Length: 412
Image (cartoon, rainbow, N blue to C red; front, side, top):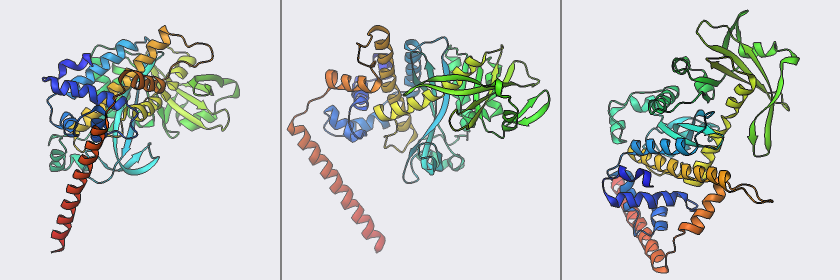
């Protein structure tokens, strides 16, 4: 918290931000301004709501602090930047960026809010270092709606690959360098994103659809057509990294492409050893790269799923109940900071404190439990709990009375 202290002009929101982050790290079954305020010992949720809505501090500056914190403590010369989006299911139409759209969280089209994240993934750990909210055209075409949600009236539509490019350029502009970027088909199928990476000399291993067209010396073919031509002897069994049940072994093959632009271009193909299911990746590097290196980068993509799982399960990334963009940016930035803290502590523990025989190394989940239970578990008396019970019931009574009045007025 000391790293972001200078981002607050007053000490009250600075102290409250610290309590808010601890609340995000707590074992509360549901995290919002009400539950966090009660857990932190405050008399009402107004202070926490003020922190997210009206207090003077810059969430983008704190986001930059999170990036520096993660890169400093999880630094790895072979780190990979992973780009991916995740969705939060929402009700209604007023939450910023919400509409019916596909989200991998539900695996189908749902009323949801989608954001793109940039994750720094290295041997010592992984954590999100940037975020951008996806604002659909249904919003950017309605200036009044944007203004009501705290967005500028001139907010322009940007695709998810464009948001990813913005974050990568911000990472690069901060003076950090990585050799590789990976992502799913949304990003692999975007020529502008690939060109931007090539111009900066960044290698990539980006997933593409089976119908993606590839140019070889023999002509242009679909990716699945090229995969069918791969001889049996060309497949190699390699691990894409360690999973919860051990190394993730697949069969891999690579085909050189013949495109006019400089650099080495290849099609990487992954085959499931059990089902035979195929996945395809478009690859680019400035220098010839061995198959094992491409497989390592492709396997790094799984770490973004682990990051989302930890940020949502341990730091409340998706539990915000805010409608306007400034509040969303503040919530997710502080959630990123909370998870980054767990990832850094885990990395340091693995480096300096080896687990005794019979114990697995400390995980982020276990670090969260120990930290909250041993270090900061707040203890509040019966008077505090009864006061909050009265506050909730009083608020609910006001809400019910207001609802009845509106209902009666609409019927007259």
